[in-house]
Amino acid sequence: MAKEPEKDMEREMELLRRARSYLSAMAEGRNPLTGEEEPEGSTLNEVRIARCLYYVVGVLDKVIDNGGQIGAPPKEKKPKRERPFALSDEQLCSIPAEPAAISISALLSRVNALIPEDMKKLSYRQTAAWLVDQGLMKEQQTAAGRTITLPTEAGEALGISRKQLMGKAGPYWGNLFSTDAQVFLLTHLPDIAAEQQRIDPETGELLEES
Image 1: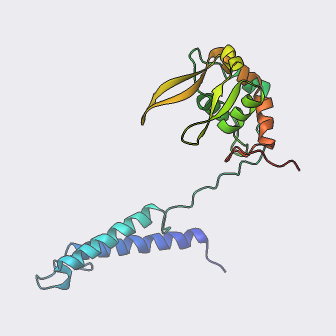
Image 2: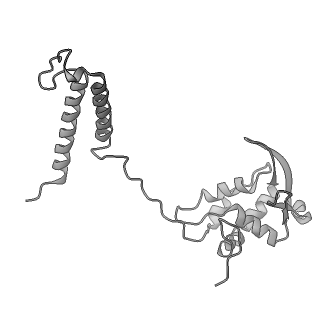
Image 3: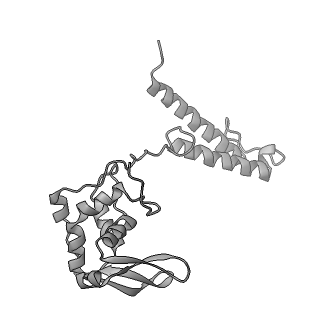
């Protein structure tokens, strides 16, 4: 008859605790069976030996705390984000626009917090690409060769502004969306989500139509 796994694990844990007890006594310079102190000339009283024993005791403590498993417990794998982005009308209504102007990233952070782990997030690149398609933002090359997005006249009229902001690394330029601009984006989230089908979220490049 096969042994029950639980009893086997209990036996293994008992052996680990006993080994830990013996090594701890040896590290302290005591005979693990009698508890008596070893004489000064004993190998157990060598500093390097004692340090090694204390180290092993520490390792056994971690193994015991980990339920007898060596190493960290396996991390639970998160599901891949493969489902297209989608929110219900009820979820959309639960995202109020902020009274102060905020960035696209700040708004998307609140939006993406509502979706399950297997659903694709909306990205800044996808949203910016959609805004460019709508004529509300435009792309421009900087002197350093970077591509940035700026509000057009139509975008400014909607409530998109470009301002100098202060970050941890110092001042930088960014686009802010007023309350009206936020409401506009939230209303058109389904249209922006369609951008997932043709925009690579990592590169922002147009994907080939199949």
